[in-house]
Length: 256
Picture 1: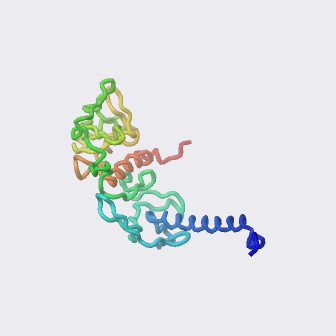
Picture 2 (picture 1 turned 60 degrees about the vertical axis):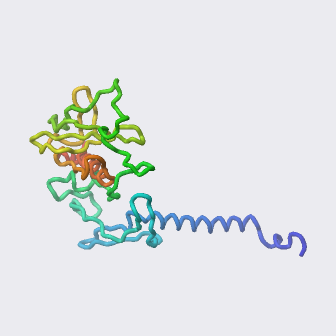
Picture 3 (picture 1 turned 90 degrees about the vertical axis):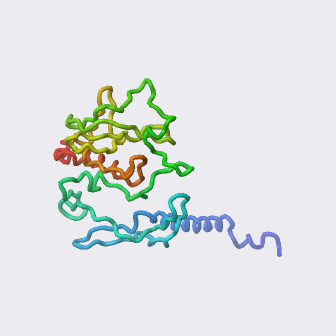
């Protein structure tokens, strides 16, 4: 066969382009399918019925991931989503309004959260990475900083909600994640968590603008006093997030 006989009839550059298009299309399809292992199929209200939508390219086949510390996890999970304690303000698609008198824990709006695994975030050795400082003898508050333990925690209304009893540290990132507070006696006197990013530490107290003083009593509690799970973190963060909109009736009103 003469040299160049094949390439006289085929454009190699064009074939390479076509091959790239096919590869790219398959890649997009694969990534679309794999992205649906959590959060799909979508559920939405249509009239008085709840409909499920698999979206573009359908749903992937179940796949089991073998984790080192938390057993086998199979996704996607064919289970119905929790029904929200809310309804559209007017028509489907309009902003939703809470149906209860305590929307801070209802998981709606800025208080929405994901149902993550009910296990703690871990180090590579399997130990929980977020612990109270009493279990971390090598950690302490820097001398030049204010030690928050013993300080009062004040809500957006200026009411004292409790006081800090312990500091919870992310021993991997080497930073404070939560304050463990004990609510005031009139609010139940229970131990709840306060995320560091929802408060401002002062010399005399810790101020929290997300919720009111009495609302510290409603913060979701932990199953253990030595660790916090991923699901518990979601619920605690969501509670304070919901307070930015639902702590007072005025916060739901227009800004202007």
